[in-house]
Amino acid sequence: MGGITKALFGSSQKQTQVGPTLEETMAMAAPWGVTAPGIGSTTVDQEGRTISTTIDPQMKALADMFRQRMGQQTAAIAGYDPTQAAREYYSQYIEPDLSYQQEQARLGLENRLLSQGMLGSTGGAMQMGELARAQSAEQRAGRAGAFTQAQDLLNQMRQREAADLAAMAGIYEGPVSLMKTGAGIGGTMGQIAAGYTPTYQTSGGGGGLFGSLLPAFGSYAGSTSGSAALTKLFGL
Image (cartoon, rainbow, N blue to C red; front, side, top):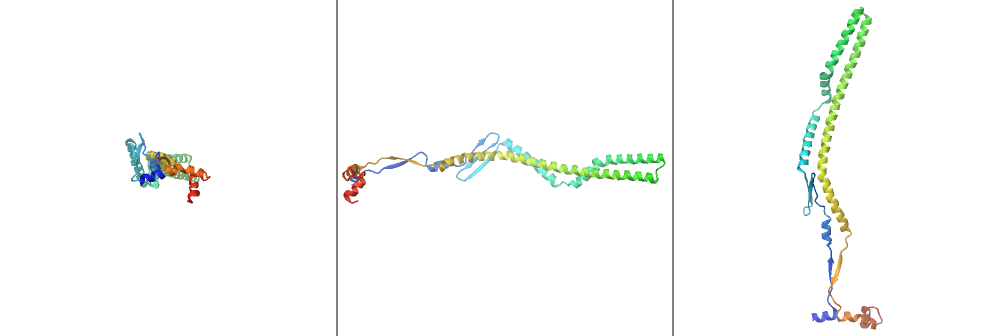
């Protein structure tokens, strides 16, 4: 029976997809693992949907050094009191020299007033008062300068802390850049996959007796297609 059916109606045709499947193309769109000497590498786990990064050992050691130094700076900043530091700076570096200079100035003025017979007089007292006010202003300026020095030191520690943080982040940015590169490759392939249209190749099959007679039926019935001829002849 099957042989008769095949002879009358022909065998079925088979379509075979040519080229990669959509699934294969989509797999190519996934991020790629990338390795760069002196920087590190990235590994993509497609099944687990994770990306892991590895830093070059020498770069890792350098990043650890920056992290440790940054931690030291952070601890130093947390325990730093600019006001107390200014007092210490003034007493250690400014006050000794300033006190000596001011004492010499007072002695010099007193000797001059004494030689002029003005020491203890109204005019001498006025000159001693002017010197005292001038020296008081010098002391205030010295304390202000000490506080500026202390604040500058704090700013320097913060700058070193920020510089170490930036240097450490720059090292870790290397593998991140590799990850972005791998994702970019996959993204390009994804664009290809997005516009992917599968193609098919037809093979096998034959028209059988009816298939070969359809053109004749079409001619007989005055139609351009065999199916239309069948419709006219058999009312199909």
